[in-house]
Length: 272
Image 1: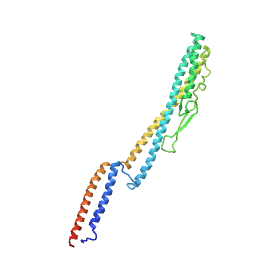
Image 2: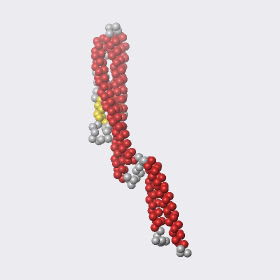
Image 3: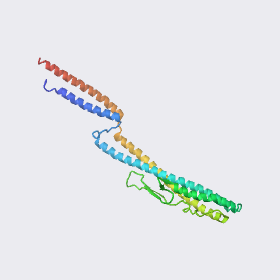
Image 4: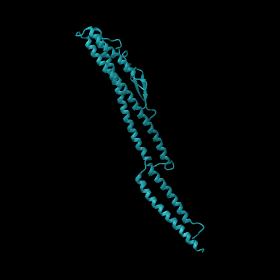
């Protein structure tokens, strides 16, 4: 029925044009942002899943940071122990030289001057080997590090329970002023070297564990990021095809609206 009161063809054309325009806006937004979900209305369920994954990803990133901090602490401790080991090696050389009958007590006194300075340096290294003012080599360090996004996962304990100062190593009272005390110092230093070596082995083992933990964290993050991309990353190829299709629909709707308005104008001429 031809009517000038209600232009249904124009109304339908406008409705289709508005719907296509909304779809085009959604496609262009996704293309410009690179995200498949730009509002909850795009995919409410997908957004909920993505949000949960984002929380897990943040937890894994923090776990990675924790592993890096723990490794840095252990590297600092190992650096201090390495210096102490070098000092003990030099002290052993001095004690060995002083225990020989080829030197006099006067020469031993000179050797002992360096020997005592090295004992003091061991204490200085222990005092200065810290991480943010926390002592690492005085036998008191004991902390736990969470290296998983799972709150129920067991944390890794980092314990350095040996005091590596001269007293803890048993060399505080050693001297090389005589052949007898020098021989005794050799025994003490040998024990101290074994203690430091054992400490470095323990620190190295803990570092190795954190290295493997860090590898696991990176794998978990990579897998989770891949899963997140399924929900959030836009398919640009598909969006490009949709844009072309919607462009044709918009042109058609505009043409239909134009024709509807033109037809209404022609009907109105019958009244003149």
